[in-house]
Length: 163
Image (cartoon, rainbow, N blue to C red; front, side, top):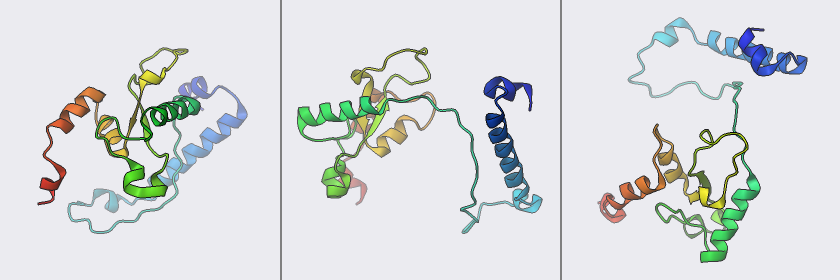
């Protein structure tokens, strides 16, 4: 195992075996694509093989589910509904029972910015629909909630978009 991997995973044999298995899976997937397939010009792709099982190794930042639940409860206690704080989309209104209680939670202070041990407050969270959440994170630098609301304020009414 390389020095970087040893530094990241230590010498724990279980972690080492998992890392070796992940590396083997990556090599196998790289070898699964032929040189011809890799060099093909894919401007006119109408179909492609998908669904192959891949193994990915990611480092993730810890999140507190209870804080998200408290944010949702605070919104429900305040307005009686969960709606996007950017565009006002409401999953319950559109999807009925299937949408009840569903909304995503956005950290307005990116988790990679605070130092270890920093506490996230309810005011650091925003309830947003899936589309708005994707737009907030679409490219770096990420949009702030205020910037996203400003973009939405400039949009034409939805009815005129379908005409």
